[in-house]
Image 1 (cartoon, helix red, strand yellow):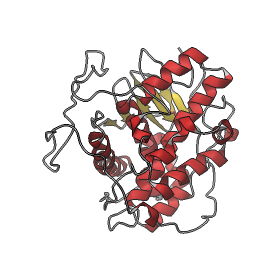
Image 2: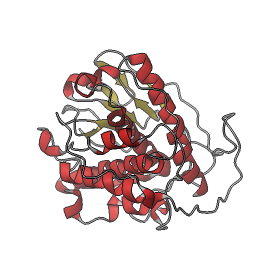
Image 3: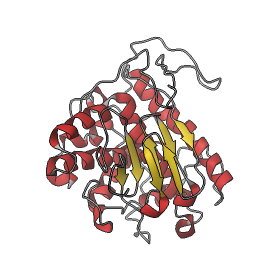
Image 4: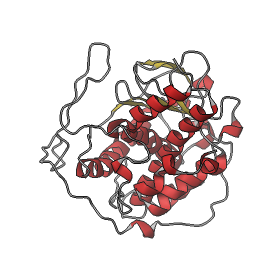
Length: 330
């Protein structure tokens, strides 16, 4: 077992904010900061309007009435709630040389994302995140299918209370867990009572960026990156200097993927407007220095920088934290 990292055999998990020590198998993201930073500018991500789609190599079939294609990859749940190995396109267990980063033009297509109105209550928040998932499914599903990588929609759950369980363990909002991705059952957990809405209120950009970060871990899971990371960290030792650096590379990449989604949908005529974009931009100061746990996520400077790298470039190659210098993922 490893404390705030991914377990290679029993499953993968990522959380927003730190988890407690012990046998918790989560990969934690640092928690919120108590205030917004001044926005440096009103970036509208016009740099992300051109994009090259790699040619699709497989014929795909539909699973949603609202889409024309989806991956042929399918999976089934086992009796313990974990996901059985899928058929169809296979994940690639690589890091820096993963095909997701093979071309400098690979990115998310720009489109108008329609979102339910945010209201600060559990049922409205659930509707908001379900709507956001549809947009994220469209964004990342298109790219992964085109690269002949697996794509499956994640399950989305909204635990009540401040303590909840997943196949990856027991999680507690009082320990700083605000949101969680468990790779064992490919599920994103968004517990309303852990989102610190009393602090952030009706600022949906904050919550959208968090959700997109967790979805970024789902992309890593589907593509095979998380498995490759887990193997590398197992060899290094979870709490070794190299093991913690690998954890930071994983989390900072999810940050960059979150930024890509916001950058590709902001100002495109949907509900990801300039206000939501700026709220997301101004809420990325969640570095390791704000917590007493291990340095497994990166400094606030790098947490912010990788998110901004994703949103202003919208290119997966720009999110290749595995190829970055150690000084850029500290």
